[in-house]
Image (cartoon, rainbow, N blue to C red; front, side, top):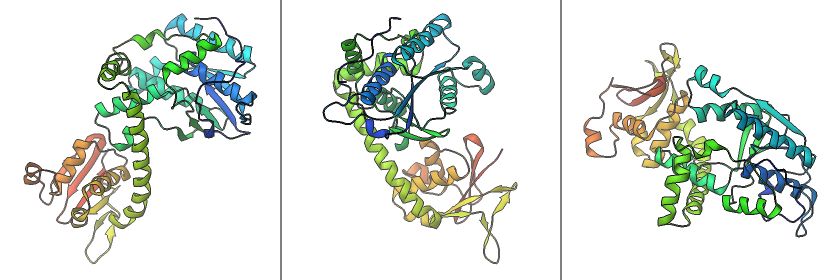
Length: 361
């Protein structure tokens, strides 16, 4: 679809969360040309220029950006032309980034989706704006949570797509449409006579997200018609849980996470394994903790060494300390001097009283 619709002239029925931006801020909308990002752009233009339902205009400085990934040949060129023409028609400043996903894949040994995402956010992070708005919907949230669940993610993974993410260059990412269904997006655009672009790669079920979107989610809806909303609520709950644990660990870790290893005569040696920094946790203190805290302390120790523990690896570390969750694990727990060599160069060793963590290149 290449026809450009008119600038919206009526009150939006999209439930955009405009509280994510503030009056006077520079907000750039990432526009692929698909329905979600086009709807977000039109919805923000409307919120910015019209007073609806006794609400004041948003009052932000809007612009748009499009990332051309160097994939899909002429189809991608037409996407860029569509977005450029739409922005020109609406009087929105436009910037295009041309990136080479295929080259990134080879250089970094990444998958297609990962390479595209990294380059996309790298480009958007170079913008001199306060916020970059992306068109993630409630459906995207549900799909993300389901993918994370299938991969065995911890609570932070089940939090899915966050409404606000800090640290994108000098700006932050905001997602005002996380409460909006994809069906509502399309109905909104159709009511305005606004067309959008369809990305043919979205139908490629060899890609994990597309399989989840086109095969798994429809099946789940046959069991629970509101599964998207259920997963979105679970994501919000998981983010609240993570926020609590973040503050709780900030209070607890300085008391239980020890640098280096003990030395004769008292004190601790900060560097004692191949010149690297070691972090340790006392096993008796770990044993007294509730299971939920115990897991998080172990994972925090690994994170201090620049590593992330999976659920399986966390269980192995606790088993090394004799704190496994079942009898079998407890029986194979390590003796003093036993060591685990985990992914990413993380090493964990048990002494008589401690678990010691360090990173080995």
